Image (cartoon, rainbow, N blue to C red):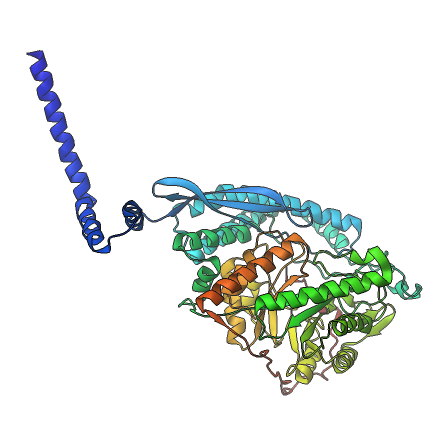
Length: 588
C-alpha cells in the first residue's frame, strides 16, 4: 500500500514537472524557434549542422551586457605607471573577460624640467593611477553594470558624469578647510608654479655646440586635472573594444560606425607623419626652433609603401649621423627621433637633404617635410620673444620671416605644427595668409584637449587643422566628434601619439575609423611606435583586399586669408599682454 502511494506521488510530481516544462518552453517560444531553424536547415544543408545550430541560438540569446570592470597598474614605454582595464561581460549566461585596453600616461613637463618638478609630477601621476583604479573597480563598474557595450556614447557619458560627481564631492570637502589653511595652500601653490628662468639668458654665452645641460624650458601653467580622471580614457577604449567584439566587426570599422551614421564602405587611409630628427630646446646644441623634423610621403603611395620608404630614409639619416659622431648617433628620444647636436635650424634640414640625395630622392617631389616647432616651449615671457637659437630672440613678426626663409630655401616643407603660440593670433593669421595654399599650418598645443575643443572649436585660430590625442579625461566619442568638427570645417585632422604610449595599438584603429588625414606616431623604432605602424599596415591590407580603400591623390591644402580688420581693432601687433601669457595651458 505504501509503495502504491509513493508511486502515485512520483507520477503526480512527474506530471507537474512536465507541465512546468511545457509552460517554460512555451513562454520562451522554444518549439517555434526549433521548428524555424530545423525547417531552414533542410533547405540550407549546412556542412556543420551543430555549428549552424550554435550560430542560430547565439543570435537569439540574451544581449551581451557589461558585468564589471577590473583595473591594474602597468608600465608605459617610459617605465611610468599607467592603467590597464579589463571588461567582463555576461555572454550566453556566462561571465567572461571580453576585452582589455591600456592607456598612455600623461607627461606635462619637458625633459629639461628641474628634478624637483619631475618628482612632483611622478608623485601626481602615481596618485592619479591609484585613484583611477579605485574609481574603475568601484563606482564606474557599478554605473556601467548591465549596460549594452555597443552604447559607446552612453557609456562615455556615464563615466564622465561619475568622475564629475566625484570631483564635486572632493571640492566640497576641500571647501570645509579653514580659510587660513586654504590661503596658505594657495600661496605655496603659486610659489611652486612660478616658471624657472635661471640660466635661460646665460645660455647664449656658451661655446658653439655645447650641451644644454642647465637649460630650463619655460612651461605654461598646467591645467589642473582631477586626480583619477584618467579612468575616463581607459574605460572608453575598453568599451569600444568590447563593442567591436559584440558586433563581430574589426575595431576600425566599429569606430567608423560610431563616427558616422552610416559606416563608410570605403576608407581614406591616413598619411604618416614620421619623426626622423628630434631637436629643440631639450636637445644638445644651440638650435631651438625645430623640435621635430617629420617626413611625409606622397599621398598616392600605399601605406606599406609609405612606411617602407620613410623607414629607409630614417635608417639612412641615422647611418649618416653615425659616420659623423660615432655610436652616440644611436641615441633617440621617446618618439624614436635621432637627436643630433646642431646650432642652426637649417643644419637639420641639410641633414635630411643629404640623406635623400644619397637615396636618389628629392624633397618636394618624392617625399615631403613637416616641422614641429612647439613655439610655446621657446617663448620667453619676460622678454616677450621666441628664442629660436641660443641668444637669438625673435618677435612674432620676425618669426614669419624665419619660416618664410625656411620654406623658400627648402620647398619640400609642407607642414608647420605650432609655429607660434596661441596668443599670437595676428601673426598666425598672417602666416596662414602667406603659406596655407602650399603648407599646412597646424595646431597642437594651441588648441585645447578634444572635449574642450568641442565647446570652443577653432575660435579665433583658424588654422589648417589640429592634432587630437587620447589621454586623461578624453573619451573616444570626444575624439570622434572633434574629428568630425574639424573635417566639417574643411580642415585636416591628425591623430597623434604621446610620450607615455604603450604597445596597445588602439590609436591605429581610431585613426582609420575617424578618417584622420594624418597620423603622427613617431619614428619606425621602439615597440610602442612599431606596434602602431604594424597595425596600420595590417588594416591597409584588409581594406585593400576588400576593395574598400580609397586612394588619396593630393594633399588637401586650403587657403586661409587674413580677415578684414574691424572698427576699433588695435594696430595688429602680434605680441600679447603679460597676463595673457600666463593663461593656463588647456591641452593635455
